[in-house]
Image (cartoon, rainbow, N blue to C red):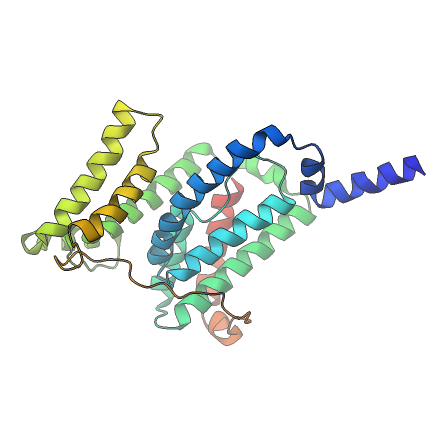
Length: 276
């Protein structure tokens, strides 16, 4: 009986690694884990709101994605020290797919959900057929270049928010050139807030590398908004984020089929970023 019970526990732990982790959990870790969880959550919330904006979907969807990734990996993942969730590279790819497909309005969230589900199916195919060996054929330089390009695209896309202006363009270079022409109309208060935010993050990294600059900036921003009445001064705020969870819906298959090429290319790119 003992042997059978041990075998059953091993099978459960293989499917649900969290069961084995909880069994061997040291209670002395709890305090540190709680502090780490609060800090990570404080950083993830604004970060994922921003990622949702980059992807062009409603901001609250960033919170849903962050929560889903964290909970599912905690249950099925094998590493205790990892933080799972959306990234700027993934958001940039999703946003580029939206622009390429010409999707707008309420269809954007549906389109991005379809891309996400398609990439998930591709990951399942890789897992079922044990195709992890593919990673040895992709150059690290290619992956680094791809991520660097995605980072440049994200930075250029966020520049107008630092100056309170608008920029247009079918690609990053044209958008950057359009942004340069709007510098004369830059909103002073917005520029000051943006510059201070960037300086705080980089100075803390140099002077006090162990202090989480992003967390300091987050708390400082929350305090500065009412203290200096930033909204009345014209600084754009995130605004109200809808509460609660959305109802589960199947993405519009007609929309996805009409843009099948863009969906497949974007899903493949997401797999490449996440897999390699």
